[in-house]
Length: 224
Ligand code: C5P
Image 1 (cartoon, helix red, strand yellow):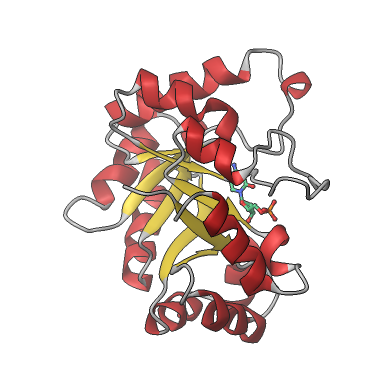
Image 2: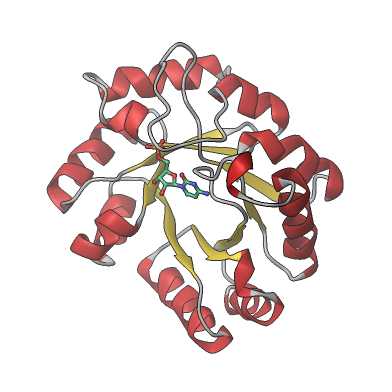
């Protein structure tokens, strides 16, 4: 499956989000609705993006008791999410309940491992080993894949026999020279080379003077 660009619609109102979605969906259908947009716009934004022909990664990173996480996944599916996610650190019972809640649906539930804003010096252990451990657990617990940085994508794919999806934020186009708050960063081409199935890119597209052109540049840099 060729890697897909997911544009993070990190804006604070539905009008701007839909303007971006309308512009970008013909180039790449995958849009990310995260905490900033969802908190102000609510679940309707998901169906509005879908009506434009988009596909939605609802990135709300659920982390709660198993019953609540499972019902949140069910609500995400009802809202129209194609992908949603839970924090791996919620543990086995929560992750299994979340995976179970999506059984029989087409929604992919991913496990968030270590945020891409975390630098190696921020944690006592080896981040790659932590992510690989989470990836093995994600597969064993029935999740469809993990959210990790491109730095760990190759190790995740190897450790799980290519059986789970790798969705990577922390992507910065070559030559941009600005990582914002992201710390474990790769270029789009490097991340795809490492095995990423989905690249999540926000500010380099949404804050560009010409967002469509910025998205097209990324798409051509990954050869699609
Ligand atoms: O603007 P930027 O490209 O840094 O946006 C990255 C997007 O990916 C943000 O919406 C952020 O919430 C999300 N994300 C992330 N790291 C994770 C999971 C999600 O940066 N581990």
